[in-house]
Length: 166
Image (tube, rainbow, N blue to C red; front, side, top):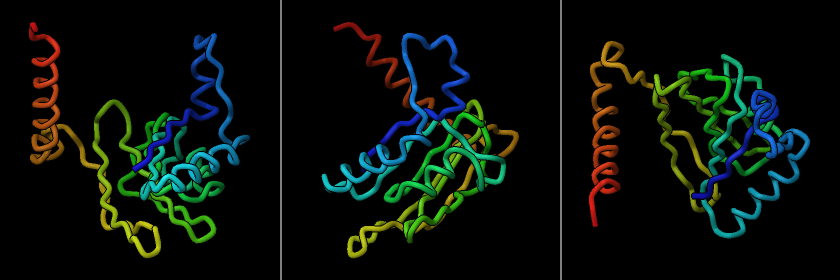
C-alpha cells in the first residue's frame, strides 16, 4: 500500500497562523498528484490511499476530494477530512474507468469508517466489498466497545512502552 497526504485549499485558508509554511492548491496541481500516484504504481504499490484534509459535501458527491478523484486516476481510497462530513458508506467516483472510494468518518472521533476492498492482480484494480461508518459511543451502538477497547488497549501499550525506564 502507498499513502499520500494532502491538505486542501479551504483547509489551508483555515490555517492563517501557519507561516512560514505555505500550501499549494491541489486543484491547480492535479498533474503533480497524478505523477505521485503513477510513481507509487511503478514501484509496485497495489493500493493507493490518499489521506486528505480537503473534504466533501454531505452527500459525498461534491467537494475538493470528489474533484481530486475526478481528475486523478489510480487512487483506490480517499480518506476525507476537514469538512467533518460523515458519509454513511463509501462514495464511488469513476474517472476514465478507474473507481475511487471516498470515506469520511466525521468529526472528533465520533465515528470510525471501515472499508473492505478486494485487490484483483490480473487487472490491478480493487472492488468495494463493504463499507460503513459506525458510531463510537456506547449509547449509539452496543458494539462500539469493540471499537474503543482495541484503541484504549493500544494506547495503554504505547504508554507503558514510552514511560518505562530502560
